[in-house]
Image: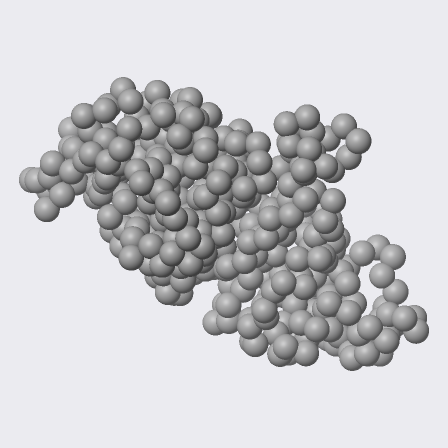
Length: 381
C-alpha cells in the first residue's frame, strides 16, 4: 500500500492534519502567509528532530540535497534558512503546544493496558523537572544566574507508556514545586514525586482532590507517630506508621493524618522514607510505586539525548518553546506509530532506524521486521 512513498511521508500520515489546522486557525498562524505555512514548518522541524540536525543550516542543507523529493515529503515550497528562521521565531508556539496535547490524547488510549510492573489498576503519574542550560549572551530572556541562562521543563508522565500528561516550560529560576499549581488532579490516580515537591499545602490540595500521592520525605520533616502497623521485614519495609505532621504551621497546612513508611533498598544499600495519603495499600507496593518514578528520569534522558532540545534552532523565547513542543510532538508521534504498527521494539530503536531512512521508499513496517515483508521468510545476514 505504501510502496513508492518516502519513509518521512509515511510517518507524517499518522499526523491528524485536520486537527493541526484547528490549532493553526485558533492562533491565526497562517494569517497573511502565502507559501511557508505552519504545516510546512512542522514537517521541516520534525524532519530536523528525526534526523538529528543540530542547526537550521543543517536542516536546509539536507533537504535541498534531495530537492526533487521535497514534494513527495509534503513540502511544496523552497526551503531557505532565512525563511525557516523567520517562521520559527514568529509562528505562535501555542500552536504546537495545543497539537502536542491532541497527540497525547490519541496516544494515551493505546497504552492504557501497558504493564508498569506493579500490581495496580490505577493510573500512576510521575512528576519531575529538568533544567536545560543555555548561554546567557544568546538567551538573555532566560536569565538563571549571573553568568548562566536556563529554562526548566516541568513534566508529568503517565507511567503506562511514558506518555507526557503535563508539560510546563519556565525560566530556570522557577522552583519545581510551583508546577503543582497548574495540575488538575485525577481522582483515584497516584502521583509520585521526589522530596523537592514536599509542600504541605499543595499536598493537601491533592488530597482534597481524592487523589493519592507517594513522596519521599526530607531529612528534617517533623512527623508525629500515632501508631504503627505490623510489617513484613523480608520485603524491605522497616516501619509503617500512621501520624501527622508536627508543628502548628505544618499541621495547619496539612491537618489530616498520613502514612510514613521507612524502606531499605538492599541493592542500593540505602534507606528511604516515604509519605503517602493512601492508608490501605501494602507498604511494599508504596515502595514499588516510588521506584517506578525513575521512568521519568529515563524520559528526560531520552528527550535530551535523542531529540534536539539542547542545540536550539533559534534564540527567542518563541523559537525555543516551539522547538521543545515539536520535539514532544515527535516523541508522542513515534509512540503512536509503535502501537499502530504493533512494533515490539523500543522508541529508541524506532528513532534510530528512522534517522537513517527518511528518504527510502519502502513500507514503514518492514524497517522494523526481522522477516522479509514480501516472502515472510527469515532474512539471511
